[in-house]
Length: 120
Image (tube, rainbow, N blue to C red; front, side, top):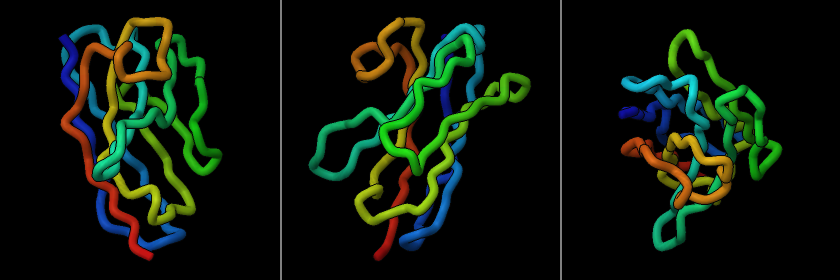
């Protein structure tokens, strides 16, 4: 079983950058694909991007965001640049062995989320 812990969220201003981290433990993490999702208040969860276990990067929904990983540290990162108030949400990482990565229903393990708040 894989445990995931997100960190790096916080309160920032419009135009700032943040790098979120997803720290994994347990299981054979390098065999899992990892996705990032976010959920804003009163909105449905949405897919942000994912990286496959092979290292193939699916990319992100927004060119301001980028996903990377460090297998030596069992960590996946979400770099977010030029943040906007509409990026305010709880951000989650999730792990799966499914081929489909673009929806939360395909993921087995989830972190608890980290809050990102972007002030105008």
